Image 1 (cartoon, rainbow, N blue to C red):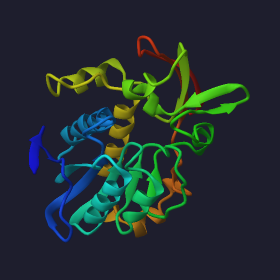
Image 2 (cartoon, rainbow, N blue to C red):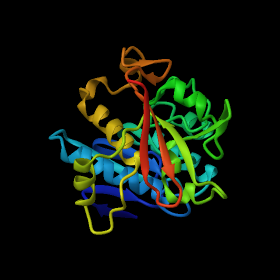
Image 3 (cartoon, helix red, strand yellow):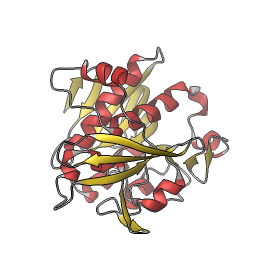
Length: 260
């Protein structure tokens, strides 16, 4: 079942293996239904902004992971066999487990952050600073470091931070930049029911911008593995920010730029 959403092909039930897509397509692989649907929609509207900025003949195909790791693996397998897909952008927990990422064996996969998963896959590229990953090894609870507990950017979403009890604020460590007024205005102008943008949106936009700006012939595993843009699968220019999130209001405050 395909639905047109802001010019993006949108599939809620996955795709069929051994199919062919005529144009150059980036698959947005995330959750669009269920508990974590807000993760997918943050990324979806960000991808639309990226497409609006370019004249490149690239399409985005948004695919729902299906609600479980098993369904995500099955749908990743179908994507892996689909001709015309030049890259996958995987956003969220279920779309970035090691088993799911391993399934995309022949396609470059770009991930905004390593949300507690094991790195080291040659076809997976993280737009994150490794130091930040060390501080937020567990995206579902944070890791105490010298008495401080740090959380990933997923905790800027209500579906995550509202699960925390008896806490007024938390610290977020991420390579994602805070949405500024211009970004927020452009993002919210995309539709009547577009949610407030979070760090997931700005980070996803940066990932899509990077892919779209590259010559199409370089978006392949051979070229990317030799690119100076990545070292050990991590983007070399990724900054590292710390934010304070007010659990009551959902407001973010920049604390520090650890690495520029």
